Length: 231
Image 1 (cartoon, rainbow, N blue to C red):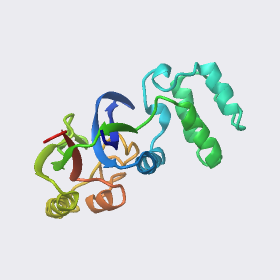
Image 2: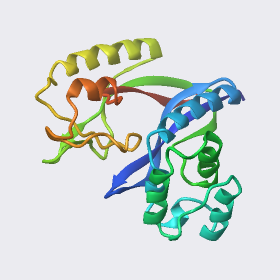
Image 3: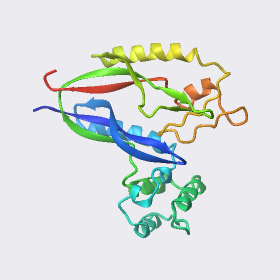
Image 4: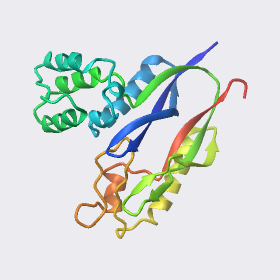
C-alpha cells in the first residue's frame, strides 16, 4: 500500500492571555517523502516560533513539556542561559521577552526543543488516496474590541481536485474581500499563530492593508481534505 506524508496544523486557540491546544488538526498538504514533508513542517514551525512566546502556550507547566521544571532549568543552563528566579509561568513568560535580544539562535532553539509539548504542526503517514482542496472563508467576528476568527475556523466555499485551481480561486476571493476593508477598519486579529498583532484603535492599531500584507492576515485559505481510498 502506497503512503503519503501529511503536514497538519494543530488546533491552538486563545484562552485569556494564553493559548491552549484543543482536539483536532487541519490538513495542509501531502508529500511523497517524509523528508519533503518534514522540511515543509519545519518551515511552518519556524515562522510561528518567530512570532509567539512559547510560555503562553499552556496554562500549566505540564502543558509545555514532559520535563519537570527543575530539570528544564538545568536544560537551559546547559547552553549558558540563566533561568528566571521564580518557577512560575508568569516568570518564564517575562524571562522569554526579557532575553529576546540577548539569546543566540542556538539558545533559542534549545528552549524550544525542551518545550516538547509546544508544537504547532505535525507530520503523519497516511495511505495514498484521493484528496480535494477546499477554499475556506475565515469567519472573522468582531467582539466589540477586536476581530478574531470564530471557533469553527471557517466555512468551505468551494472544493477542487486541483490545488492550483483552488489557489487561484482563493486569490480571487481574497482580492474581492479586501476591497470591502478600507482604512477605516482597524484590526486586531487574535489568531493562534500571530499572538502579538497590534490592538484595535487609533493609538496602537494597524490599518487593514498593513494587517493583510505585513502581518499575514488572511480572509480565505486552502485546506487539503482527505477523501480516503478508492473515492
